[in-house]
Length: 350
Image (cartoon, rainbow, N blue to C red; front, side):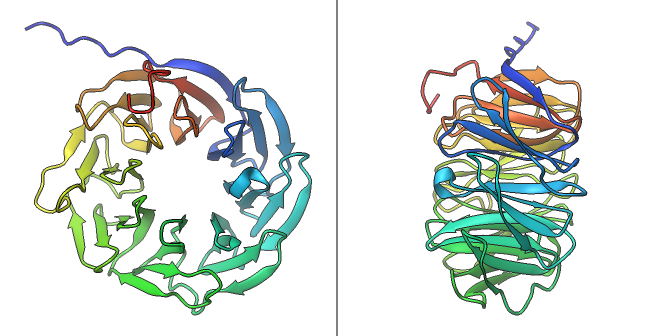
């Protein structure tokens, strides 16, 4: 039998490093900066083109856990193990406000733009703030368990949160949830399709649970090797990629949805996948695992890997640049790598 052709190697645009395990990364909307949070507590802004550090923020004592750019890149919000969220001026690094989260760790942040609000999740407490750091309200009743996911869904103008037993939808400036999808189990990861049609959660029991956002009807995907923490939609909302082991499973939501259909399975990793993400507008898809292997795919066309890179240590986070021309991986060692796909420059649909 002829030998299969080895996939090409990903090209690294630049390497950088922070002081500890990379806990979160975020590209500014204008594409000029990459913000990186670490378990050491600090937050660093890098020049997106050169990889040079341009600003170092004190961050959070005990460790920084999450970060989020505000609409228009006016502010950078961070959360950490000191029980606070913090608002920073990214132009000069000035600390603008300290926001008490209500529990030991602030683990999730989300900005909404209708109106301009910041949501912070700490333990069971979901709190809302103005852009200048004024506390507006806390959702009531509090969540039944630690909040495991938080995001803003712009198409339907809702904040969405998850915890043990339910996904909750929150309208801006309303203290009580406006809707809920219940599930008797531990929801540990949350995502919503770009069009708002589907809500998906990775579960502690090695399943993925999905709700039709209009009808509330649900379905469940089984057979994963591990609990599922890795979820990603493509830009159109047609494909949902899930981790939960060394293989990546891609479900097709076109037509009547994935019920009764066989998913695509992407196999290139020898260790469990730790991070995955689609391009914002294109069809390329990146995955990375606990052994440091990075892979690039085009799952709408093929289950064959397009390009790979082998790094020296486990990957913790992965995110595409707003232009879709490069993506970053952050690692357990504190290292960062920005990768150029072999097809970079050929268009978003490549």
